Amino acid sequence: MDKLFSQIRQYLPISADAEQALATGMERIVLPKNDLLLREGRTCRHLYFMEEGAARGYYTLEGREITHWFAFENDFLTSFHSFITQEPAVENIQLLEGSVLHRISKEKLTGLFNEFHEIERLVRIAYEKYYIRLEERYVNSHFRSATDRYESLLKESPHIIERVSLGQISSYLGISQETLSRIRAKG
Amino acid sequence: MDKLFSQIRQYLPISADAEQALATGMERIVLPKNDLLLREGRTCRHLYFMEEGAARGYYTLEGREITHWFAFENDFLTSFHSFITQEPAVENIQLLEGSVLHRISKEKLTGLFNEFHEIERLVRIAYEKYYIRLEERYVNSHFRSATDRYESLLKESPHIIERVSLGQISSYLGISQETLSRIRAKG
DNA sequence: GATCCATTTTGACCTTTGTCAAAATTGTGC
DNA sequence: GCACAATTTTGACAAAGGTCAAAATGGATC
Image (cartoon, rainbow over all chains, first blue to last red):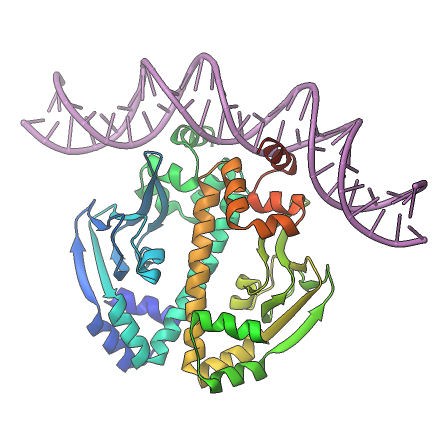
């Protein structure tokens, strides 16, 4: 739980009461590699915090798996679309390693918003951070060459490259596995 | 102001008090075509609501202007990165038509968050919507061909194509103007 | 160490998209 | 309606990246 709260404090320090309420509302889960936190077509009812481990979000397009995000230690993760709208997800969430997570249900979280203004503020701030992060990824991915994108990833998120298979990285970067392999051979 | 409040009600109905406070905190501005709401290097201090008109966000890469978003009637707009972090912007915001906008400063908005929990909730919900929207754009742009992307735009946002020049649309889609022209010639 | 399976690399070729330059079209002010 | 500028289209060619198939490598397990 320590990791979760020290991460939260980086967003917004909250009162002991609010921390206590959050701690009570969250559930710790330990799951093995390859487990699915969410399966396409089902509604995502939880927001997760990754204490230890790794996960990816992916969906299937023309028979191929496309990984569109990774999550590691200290990341919050969920299928945002499904969690927010409570509609069925188009994506799967899979653990890439045995992981330790904390999770809270949508209902509990919404209840805490009513009890603690500061928890809703915390989440508002978290959304701001995640929005900016996504915008950066968008701009980077959309307007740069495959080689540039790989080099940015290498520089800014070397942990991804160390812990994830090439096929998953290539779909994350939006290029074919063969092209990624060739880019690496040159570098 | 009507458009603003009917848009807000779609996100979250708020009390008359809160509406009143918002109305007081916001300023109506009318500006001509081509005006810059924000210039690269300056810090974005306002959140805008577009009542009438159109705008784009763009930045310069290797001597070319890259448009990465458009905003039209009923959209909220700002340089999110700069507005959130209060650091200098990397982008410009330009009006594509003479426009009527409402704006609120970061400080006023933050003050209203303290006064009215429900206004912070409204903004939290708005972030959720905008996050989902961006995620959809990300997935669409990243994993589909130029032709597909143009056709989606044509289907989902025909107003963009009617009101914006080809060069701006092509950079928005992440393709060259010539390629876009050829795609259109075929369709 | 031999075997099996998954992952990564390499080769040959094809398709899509980009680039540069020029022509055609459209829009605007006078 | 004319002149000028801006925008869009077309052509010829180049470059980036994709595809399919086969070979190489790297772990696991027995």
